[in-house]
Length: 473
Image (cartoon, rainbow, N blue to C red):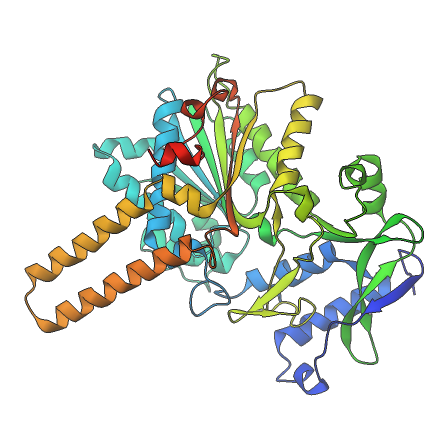
């Protein structure tokens, strides 16, 4: 047996599933568990990074590859699924940046991991309402980066009113071609950012805005624990207990490729504190952000003071190095939190986004490439961002619309429906804003490329990221 990371010691076993649960109709979790166990037998314990890749994107049993996992019937609900207001305010933010910074360029909206397409649908619908002249919609282009063929088909149905034939292999090729949304914008699908870049790298006169809503939290992570006796960092790995047929945590005694890398790039030095004994690290987040920044930089206009494009990130996470010592790796199955080593392939795996690390990365990138023109704003709490974008005003509008519709249809049933709809609107807005729900835990960050003109006071900051005293004026 080849143990690629040398001798390991058992730390703890998190999985408590019984033998009966493993045999229930040969469910996909047990089938993927067999695949994982087989790989461990041949190559040794898995990093959390490798485990997450298998559990989420295995071609046959991966969580995102074969089922509708979003919404009330899925395993979790995202902000766009909770309230249409969320997508409408994101659309306003996009339109504002486009009008202020594009200098007449056409707009490319690129959503990363769009789920069911709810956010893109709300954005497309809102842009149709905001745009005064229909022909200007020809200047707006939607690009969806989605690896799952199943979710691609749902997105196409929601955005284009087209129900694809999933039994037809030609359908996936058809979806990659240009279509139009039911609201008029052109729309394109890509399985990866790399394919998007290769197809669009020669586009001219474009202003790209990337939207990453609850995208980076699903990126694979590595987990590390401090060995106090040896004063070194060891990587946490996942092994398979053949006797109990369950996954378990172990700690590598020897250096892994990732511990060597983090020693070389100085990341361990950044978090050197006696109070920090554990941390999580996702290299793919920085690789992806670098690819996006590189793509946007190529859209730079001849005028050096012209902003090339931007990225808007919304996710749950933390924005302080002092909060790094937390175990945020978890699973969600049917709206309930679950041990992440249980039900591989059946549960969503996630970890909090380290916004402070993203800001550090952008700063270091500026220094290394001698480019001080990439600006980070935030992270700011979701309740602050949505408040500045006018969630209260928009909620009031929708409530009034419901009331007016009720007056135009004078019957008791319609009145009851209106009251129920108004309650739902208020409840959904509360979930987005309440500090005990999503208001604080979810954060927003914006990254502007070639944004040297955005230095200074709030007037030069993007809307949504002003100081709170200004937003209350």
